[in-house]
Image (cartoon, rainbow, N blue to C red; front, side, top):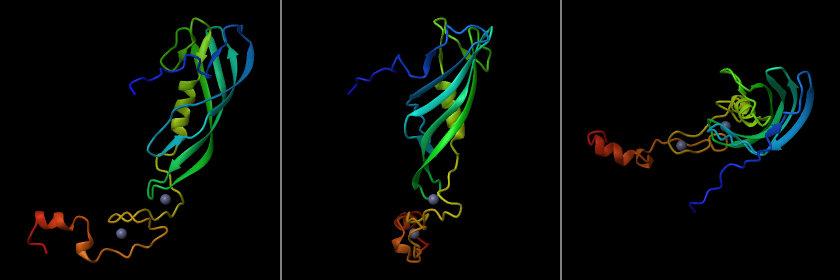
Length: 173
Ligand SMILES: [Zn+2]
Ligand SMILES: [Zn+2]
């Protein structure tokens, strides 16, 4: 299982804009997978990106909207749900990019994927909540307190750490 296919050389997010002359504009639509997987959420399906490329003397500007479905994970109870999200992307591509820019390749192609990915990552909430008053999980037994009001853990012997506590502090019984 050591065989791993390298990234596809023909990413749908790489588009040829070399034939555009300064002042030209052209609309594009691409669709493909973008791998974003954070603890708080991930992109579930292919990302659709509709954008306009405007050609300038030094390069091009791509400006458009990416849409995708995200799977979010509640940071209190760890339940998952899906949400449709959209991000606005504007990115300059130049033959000699500055620090904020990206490269317009010598073959006249630009790669939208990093720009769309950056915006998608920023768009995902850092600490999603399944609902504002999510009660989370019992810190002792892991019961989902939204569906099961954990009866509590008054009986110390039920506690998974009880044995450990006794080892650490035998007086405390
Ligand atoms: Zn929750
Ligand atoms: Zn509990």
